[in-house]
Image (tube, rainbow, N blue to C red; front, side, top):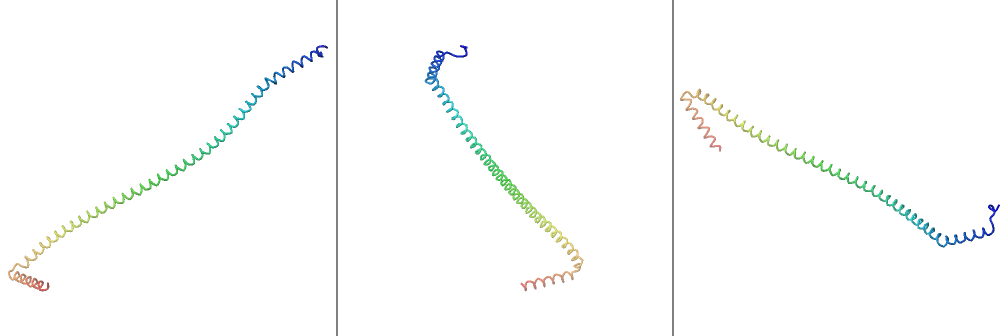
Length: 168
């Protein structure tokens, strides 16, 4: 039974050794252990603080990213609007130029048609005058074959001419 029940001396020495080990640990071991635990606690706290800061920074970056995306969309819309306005202006300018060119071409065509019409009318008048003179000549030859008829025609013309001069 001596193995089960310890002697008083054994208990004394075990208590003394325990007290010495405890004193040594309390003097030298526990401060190091508690210092390491405190350092670890500080590192964990610091890591948590940095994690919160990183999370806040990520949230801020997310907000900024959303703002930048929205700004890019607005700029894109403005650029598309400007491009549409430029396109419309170019189309309007092209239409104006086309209508101006068409008006010039029509005006030139009208001028050319009028000139050709005048030329044709002058030619027709000339041909009509020649035809009239030819007809009048043939009529006069048939009527003025006698000398007496020629003298009467000259006298009539002189009288008409003298009447016209008196009126003027």
